[in-house]
Length: 77
Image (cartoon, rainbow, N blue to C red; front, side, top):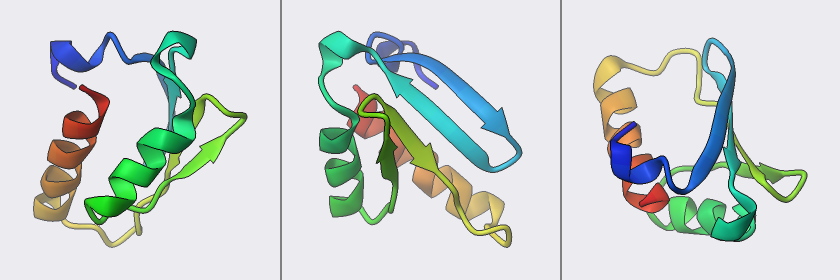
């Protein structure tokens, strides 16, 4: 992730494609980030109020992953 997004999240954890992005409390609730992602075409679920859960399909292509990462970075700025 770009350096500018590191102010927003505290941790990224998970295995394989199942990823959780923990949002810093001072950045606000994870739900607002999930709603912005949905507007850009990415479905994500907030968990425990501060975690964005990402679970892309197992058949995702590199091009689709790049597309998603661009939008995720845009929202986390």
